Length: 129
Image 1 (tube, rainbow, N blue to C red):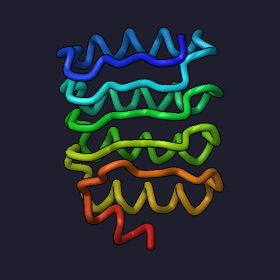
Image 2 (image 1 turned 60 degrees about the vertical axis):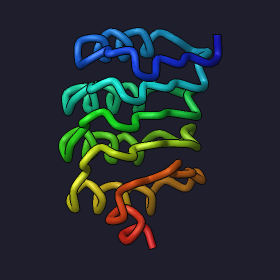
Image 3 (image 1 turned 120 degrees about the vertical axis):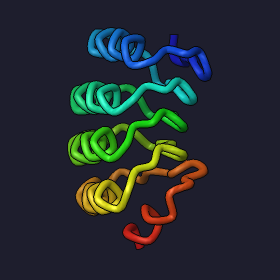
Image 4 (image 1 turned 90 degrees about the vertical axis):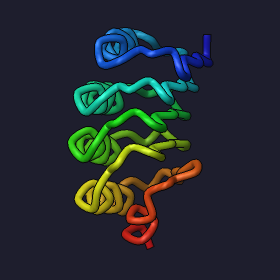
């Protein structure tokens, strides 16, 4: 399997922890949609830990998951190490200015072209310029 769509499945933070654990062992998934699942900040941190190790995932949708600044900061740190991800959707997550700055800094280090799908956080676009 290369595509997994779990959009709007009410996974919550516990479900995302299970998905993150499975991703550590999965070496075929390229497209993961976890959008609209109320995952929370802890899920952002768990997914970030996986992104540091994962070498197959290229598309990740985390739209509308209440990741907050802490989850986004963790994802930003992972983007410094992950060079496979080419599509990332973090829209509607209330990232905040600090997270936007962290993501922008990570993008300066990560040379992989990453496309931000429907990014709703204008702060992110401002700091990436």
